[in-house]
Length: 240
Length: 223
Image 1 (tube, rainbow over the protein chains, first blue to last red):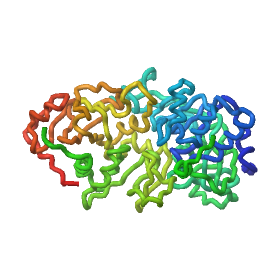
Image 2: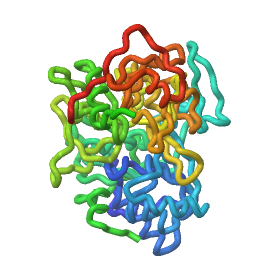
Image 3: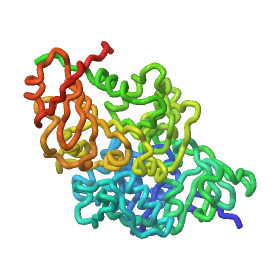
Image 4: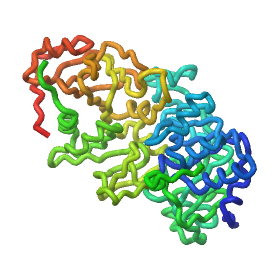
């Protein structure tokens, strides 16, 4: 078995119009910039994929990554907890113009909805958002004298993630705080595509150190010198 | 009107109540300042929602590693004994009752413990982040805030008018003028500026203060 693919274009080949796409990362930490930009390249070349629903904690920053996808007009809806950033204009402009949808989800609920999808749990109860506007219309139940809100799993057609090390079977490690949502998204998506800084052979990653087991991963592409979103922001790079 | 504590002094006061070894989450912005004022001999372990325990101060300019950030997307450093974990574990720590203290900023806090700190109304782009999770699960949820808004209206109120972050979740409030506990859906005055009378404090508070026999002086060093 070998899950590696030769290049970014091949890695993203199955991402089609209207799909729900989970994008790893919290702000720039863990953002798979090269996979995102490969999607933008394809959209510019042949107009697809478009009308995507993007799941991420945020809604992009500046003119790169998810913000550049929004700028390009590829995104129909964001599912996120915090659509603000140092430079949120891409999302803000489209949102205020009514050109992009938003499902606002508390951050821990977002994580747990993704985790639940990967774990085969269709719904769960959380104390977060009880009694607030965010809970309107959702079932509520009382357990041991406290109120909880029912939330549903959040699945995706595809997840695009950034890992530090991958072996050819898809076992992954991450760099520092960059793992954030990625282990959850890997399990929640029907197809999980990973850009890894280095691809190694089975056995080269100590099984004790594997964070995401390869069962959750479908395709791996090596990006040896991945760009960091925050660093690109500070350089003033625009990808549009 | 008498003088008031600066934000740094409010943060200093809140830091004095954090026990040695406590696991602590500090909200984005002003609450992050609390970490600077750990009393000698008391070492808290700080949690950030994006998946780090036991982080330290910001790195020197130019030394940032942007894979190592806090919930406010600011670069951080690690202390010995730090740990990384994914987002579901991170919020499991929050909702599962494993944090000792969460210290948050606020727009309004009500005498029944309701907190409003995520939205000032329907205008603009709504953003909630982890606030609605953080107010549940920590053993103590404390708020640090100026006692009144910039235009002088009380931030401590009978009932919140702004959209709620959480219901009945706040247990202690540190303000620029006083320290209060929320008990039985009332503000109980624990400390106030010594230069201020109870009547003066009541006049800038939007709910009735409960006055115990002992009310301490709220005194902070120059910072």
